[in-house]
Length: 632
Image 1 (tube, rainbow, N blue to C red):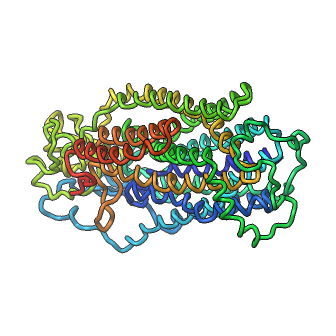
Image 2: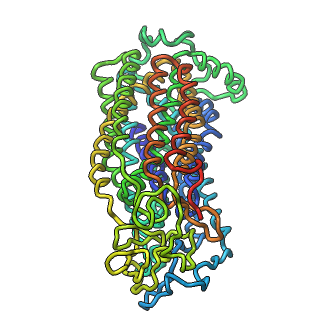
Image 3: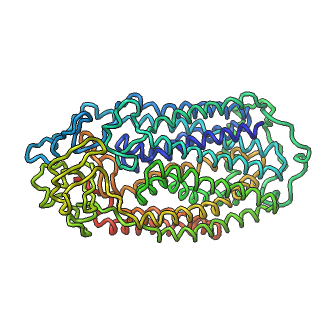
């Protein structure tokens, strides 16, 4: 019963966590914030863990573990509902556009006002303060992190305490597999919600001139959080009816194996002062905390494993957080399709890999040393396969004034004005792209030199466009979709992504068993909790932030907030984005492999030199100083 309840709790927390990842771009656009700030919001979950995990892991192991897990699930649910709250108080979403059209009329304002200043007029700043509503998402994610804290350390230690040693790996593998199935449904939920317009039911969809593939589109991000919060609330129910402890199998009363004893430096048969079924004295437990932690960190196997998994988690978290965004920006896919592919292709490969790793360990009865070698082998193989990602690149989208000149040639200088549109009084900060007959995308109909338009919403056609020097001089709403070579390489990217995800995940369960087998049984909860604390503090919090900051350096055109200032990025330098994202991920993965072989000291110098070279390289690719996107 506990195994089923814990699996459902893992499923619920994984679903809500993956749904958060799937809404990264939606939140960026809705609150007009850059990627690094989204990284701060995403990392706030780990901040919540950091606040209480040491306390929960140490004291929770001596209290009623199932009920503590139930309380955690309730807090997770409350935090998830809080994340959705801004939608109901922030008002309707208004995306930036250069024209205003009426659904009931085919007549529009001229896209090219000549000296009238109509479009250059700054919008009202009356409600600009509402954009700070993202702070509710930040606080809700912190609360989710606090609630999630007891699930892993107390749940895994409870299973390992009451299962036969040879079955524990299989049971934990099952739970970990369920935790990976959760993201499948999380990303699928994200895919469905991303297709639905954010204000569905409150706006006339015929008046919306953008599609889910547009950089300004915002889906119904709030709807998924309501669903995830309800599921998490239900996961708390079974734990209230579970006992504090279960009878131990007779074979668990036997002595430990010689190999396991050799990894535990102090006596493995040392009696624990506070048994699960005895009253706990908090004062005595508090006095023993620091000596116990010192004893734990004095275990060389545990300490080295802790160091290398911090490096590995930096790579993993950075990749998982921004992979849907990478698929959107690099391969021109919508947020809905990117989330769908993550859910039905990538995540099942990870689940199968983790489950297979547990089965292999059980079938071949891998020792602790065997598990370590197996994890190292899968990591090295996955690293070398990942090098092929660099060959699967796409060219930048053809955008006049940014990646191409107005005559369609490649260019290095970024000038939005040309002789064909200087007569128009165009706002240069807006992003309202149109596709000319010449296959070139223009930032707005005004900058395309269009004089008239007819139709409304997605059916709007712009005419007499002086910058479109072919055909009827017309342009249509949206970016041009002329990256056929990019679409051809996309299936190969997906196939390689599935293979590498499966291979790397094979070592997940053996590596996890190495962690809990190299320490004394009574320290398992503390060891798992401290491992979670350090990896989330040194990986979960910083990784989304610095990965997001690196991504921001590759932005070519920033959006504009209502009262001015830089909003969310609208288009990226795909070459710089590809190299910066994959180099950041692979160099961390390399440190993990080197750390397994040589130890942590071999990686320090490489780490600093890598980032120095990375920022110089990104600056070279973007042809202007790092961290300065085009915003004029």
